[in-house]
Length: 148
Image 1 (cartoon, rainbow, N blue to C red):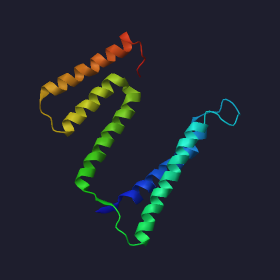
Image 2: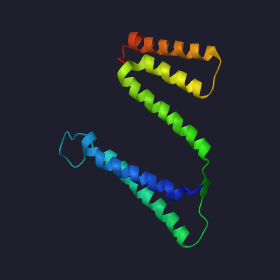
Image 3: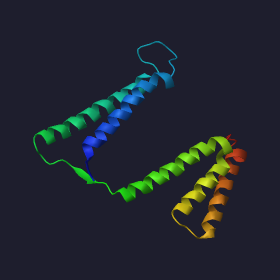
Image 4: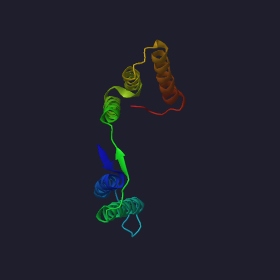
């Protein structure tokens, strides 16, 4: 399947930027009622993103109207499915992080990733578990950072 890169990318970025624009008031609480406040810089960045996305879309639409060649990319579904599976594993990690904490969710995530890539070397699993324990120890006991 072939997709027009600038048109698709601009549309997706415009969609995300508009969502972020409307989320800013609920996520960044105003501490003062001046013309420049805690929402000014985020709104400026999102506004630039919206304008840039619109310009990118318009550029591609004008090329299509003029029947000029536009940049396209071919999507190979097998590769995309692999990415989606990794995103699902990462999402599972995020949800597990809240319920069972950093240590065990990190070990589970790492093991699932190794299993997904069909790693049969037991040393890798041991190394990953040791690294997770060491990182957990360093953060909790040496740096005194509270992990969930």
